Length: 312
Ligand SMILES: CC/C=C\C=C\CC(=O)SCCNC(=O)CCNC(=O)[C@H](O)C(C)(C)COP(=O)(O)OP(=O)(O)OC[C@H]1O[C@@H](n2cnc3c(N)ncnc32)[C@H](O)[C@@H]1OP(=O)(O)O
Image (cartoon, rainbow, N blue to C red; front, top):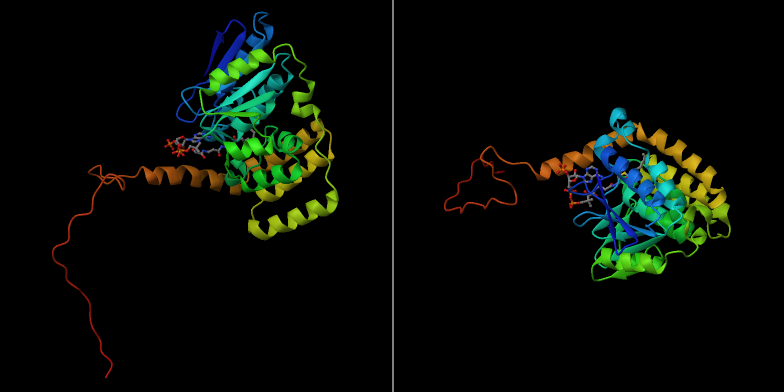
């Protein structure tokens, strides 16, 4: 779901509500697109803030829906939602608390401004799921950060802390206080200002010297580390597309690459690992004891069982 409310007379606050990580399930995607359209058509609304309900901004696409066509198709595609956000004629500010990961960061990249809490972290960890950021992230991030920093984030999938994200230019501002309140005040201050420069889809990628050699080297390094994994190589190809193609052609390349990865055995196995690891952490004995709640019993006597064979 997405909650929609108007604050301070002119700011629409859209809040993603899907605990525990505010993943972008079909219901959230439907709510988000409807809210964006409502904000667009309401003449009283002059700016928009997107946040996560009760803490985290968004943990990304709903991984449970992957491989389930009927779930995926019961909501709009992320690419369509993010295009509507970016195209909105009113400033949109992402208010990031907790984390913005995968599709969550891709949503923030479609916003015109990004505010983060000082303890928030952001990242595009799709590669760990055998995927690439397939909702515009592979095309928008290089346009914002430049190829080197974007490629590093996309190929490693690492989580970046707010301070580093601010230095990289990924976040526009960081606050220790209430992120939504700060974002609302800022949104009001930029109402009516031009937005063209703020739309990453409109920007060219910052130029890079010796582009062919750079990507050849990147592919070789990734090939050496990837041990047969397809996703890291596809990530390099997609970022190369961002550096060399117009935005829409880059988006088409990203789509082709992610569609191939999504049905691969490697992606299916990675999803299985994701949920199994979390299941293992919840495992209990039949009495309900868990690794983190039980205590070792004291040992008072011990015996050694076995055969001792000495060499003569
Ligand atoms: C269609 C376009 C093509 C591709 C686009 C892909 C874009 C994507 O967004 S892919 C997903 C990218 N996101 C991630 O990889 C984030 C995965 N999640 C995490 O790393 C962590 O869960 C966390 C968000 C950092 C939170 O960690 P923690 O607080 O330690 O909680 P957990 O125990 O890990 O998770 C709690 C609970 O939430 C479930 N969950 C987490 N993330 C997702 C998700 N993205 N979708 C669905 N469910 C998610 C997790 O399984 C746990 O639930 P259990 O019932 O306990 O398993």
